[in-house]
Image (cartoon, rainbow, N blue to C red):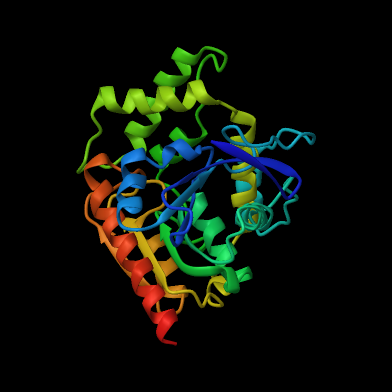
Length: 302
């Protein structure tokens, strides 16, 4: 893994596959690190002829931290958003999209297929809308348009998202806490193997654990509000992937995302929640690879 100075911060990234192959930029979700894009999933994309770039968003993993400012009151922020009151986060989804563009610049990649999950899907949407000349295709996974009527989690999922470990300084307690969180938001039709899930969570926690960054990222999501008008300007060929059993961003949020991006396709995965179950790695990679290849053919024939 390496890092590049991007938009004033050091961004940690990893490039997999042939550097000359068409690039797929993977953008992960709230508080998640580049390792949350599973190695096997990435290998499937590489085997299908792509260069895969995964990275840590600002305030997550080994990328730069955003210092200063008060600790956000997330409950108040969610209430303010419902009342359509202005919020002033330390940074926005636009800033995070700028980080991704700066990373592509640093890697000398003029255009890429962009794939985002959850908050990463929101960043990818913003990137595609603001930088159409840089995006060959867009894939938005388990994300939303910010439509306030459809983007709210179920009660148990929201409580899990906002819950905190009893001792954030103890890695074992943090690991157990996050295993429970993923148990709530995961896929009921594809339950995680407990040992495999614990191993994945442990890898992430021991690599980096930074809850203050999660709070700032969540504030950026809340402050972004309704992005439907922005989504309607996206011209990149778009695939929206959403699980039918997602408790954090319900299926209607995925449907609404597809409805507001012109010409987009919608792939509903029955029984998938708000995670990437191992049994689906190949299926999801095949769908994304086919979408990227189709977009490239359309661009070549234009």
